[in-house]
Image 1 (spheres, rainbow, N blue to C red):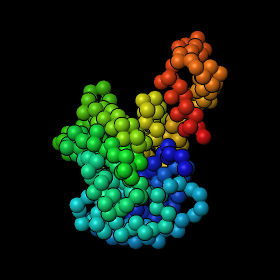
Image 2: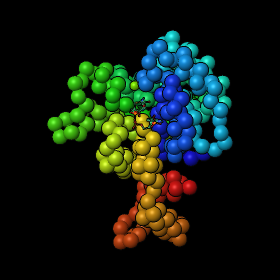
Image 3: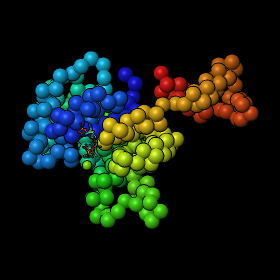
Image 4: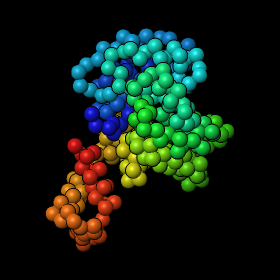
Length: 276
Ligand code: COA
Ligand code: MG
């Protein structure tokens, strides 16, 4: 299956939201057992997930478990038997060793790690490179990081993310690419601000992220659009691939009056792969 463009969080204790999420156009659903579920509801949330019946087709199913080395985490792992679970989302990951610790118990099931939620995590972003790891995706989180750092706000005076969060975001992107896994942009919390979401998702796509986390079904459409190549991008990529196919011995060519060489061909190939 294609890599998801949109990853929609759903609190696992809400049957109502789960029903809505199953009907959404999200490429992947993350049934959350961690921060969006109150401590007193976690037992019931697990029961809800155990009772879910998988329909054919539809989004990938992922479960966000509680952090490693908590009692809740151990109980969450009982859920791994549920039908057609695509993978596990690991919050508060601090290094590749955390993914290895999880995989020790969960085997080859794919893992999506959220990699910037603690202060220490910012120093571990190059540690996820491990060809034997089941790691499939890395995303970043600003909410938990700001709480961990004791910040009163994540934003600077102009309303943009402060430097610390931009750093976390860029390190997540480069760390994921270095590990050869999908780089996933973090949540846009203001779910009524569609223009703001679209701008942030497009900016992420331009930088190299290939997906974004969502917290509300209304965010899915804009995210899917932002991470789908436009018809102009497709046509441009096709013309680059065609130009190199016509002159296989060439290192550098001119396409549409501009220089293109190997990095452009690589990027064009990626665009065509994503469009498939
Ligand atoms: N998945 C599925 N359905 C959702 C949803 C989600 N993430 N978020 C909202 N909905 C549903 C609501 O239940 C509501 O359905 P209803 O009209 O049948 O009751 C509908 O979409 C409209 O919701 P709205 O009234 O706009 O929002 P809300 O106030 O009910 O919920 C949040 C706002 C933020 C609480 C909710 O979007 C949410 O729970 N998001 C996920 C939070 C999460 O998982 N966080 C962890 C990762 S950061
Ligand atoms: Mg959190």
